[in-house]
Image (cartoon, rainbow, N blue to C red; front, top):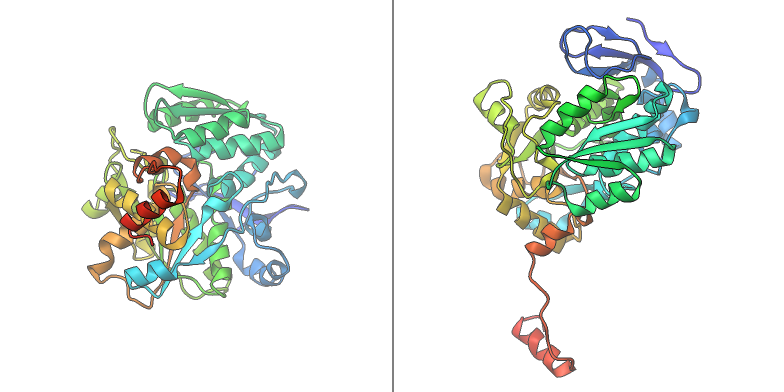
Length: 419
């Protein structure tokens, strides 16, 4: 087994196909195995790193680049960062009491620089673009990927091209991509159509793909698992519940927890629960029917961030769920909206609809007997609610118009049982 070491960057990395085991050159700009078309994964010499990382990490502040020894960047002087990672892990006592869970936590990824978990991956992915000396960065997006890539491309001084499904993106996310200077193109089709086009374009040497098909991007996203381990005082949760769209994030978290075990920092790994919307649930169907994924051509959900019918990382996600003895489950849009409101009203966390899907799962399936009251449960809220304010407004009570005097206001409050 041969690994490479580079001065000033990460050490001991290699790229392998997850399907056939074919090694790929670490300086080759590829996204899939050239031999069989399988997904790629990054590996490290964990035995060698185990002797050093704990001491190195203990003296650094929380954030993605704290864990640079397990990030595949060869030249740290090229690092493109906006302060990503280090997001809060909130012990949700009031919501936990409602759900009869003593140790319920929410990892609030909405506090990343552009408001979503995608920043963890983009800091690594855009840095790799500089290493590959590519100036045109491209992605397909339902929203969060576009805003994150646009910000990091701007930071690096690179061009950003975004393909979105026409009329199917939250305005808050579109506004970010536009203000950061991305060239945004609305495709007359769905997300999967947009992704197909960017994959074709990224075969050209002057384009670099930054969807989750890019294995380097997922390396950044796995750092959230490392943070959870630290924030829980050196332990991992019993359950990790996460929304699933293109299915890269759930596999990234699982890899992070696996690496903690390989480094000797944890003996346990959580059971992974991937949550989809009923209107976009190809992985749930495949899991429950015990078969490979069949893409869905028609998908619709209020949770636009996970409105994806053909997730490119489904094999990685299925592997993560099965190896962890977890499951995939779906919830409907009403469940998601209710969970979004409940999380906001009980804990003061305003997440986008997709980020509320794990809470929706708990609210709907808490009585199934799967999760014990004392289990440590972490739900991942993937993005800020300000990404999609229109949905929150559409499903919330409208402001009351009252005469401009204190008596009228007081009477209204009494009728509303607020005083």
